[in-house]
Image (tube, rainbow, N blue to C red; front, side, top):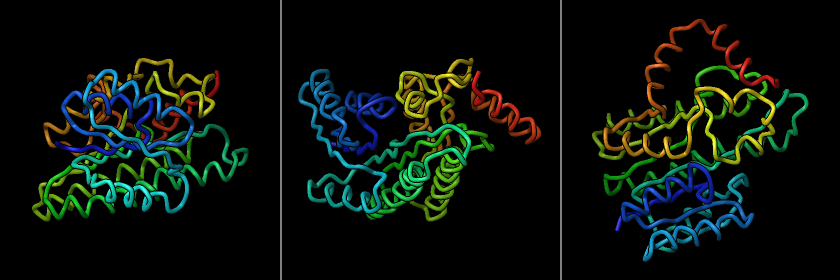
Length: 262
């Protein structure tokens, strides 16, 4: 039975992905913070998929050293996944000088350091058996500066560039292991908006918004086609090509417009 390990697996995109992999017969290890949501998510998955092999690990992935603990736990459980999904994340909104510095550092630890460490640790196992997927959730904000969401967008830029570079390295080495960066536009039906404090912005009230279901659909399609970059949503890959041709000043203006409070 194939195995998938998902971080941030108790809600939003992570839970939707867990459901999709469960439907395909994968066994699951869901990793998330200890806030009570993980237990409920596992119970719901077991109810919907009788006989599903699923377990959870509650850990704060924004803590230094957490990636090594996840890896050690997975090895102890003989759970070395065919698919690793680095999905855990959160956003912070507002002017940099008004933000809580520890919150910002925690976000960088989670999006950059922990993601890199988890990728590196499990990648070694995948390279050894010459199979597997690393799926790292980035964001459409990775492609340009994002006033009031600068630290988040910058961290997602790391995810995008690191993941695509990794996939090219794997291909150059002639390996069957693949890596994919997923760059959704704003996603409804998640806790991101409330956690980031973005209820009064236009970000989640425009035509580019997608749902976890759409994100999952396009991730699975991207895996089937061997893509290293997926921008979920019908027509959005074409839109991205158009946006890349626009002057940077216009891209920044558009980003600032949707991120500004109404």
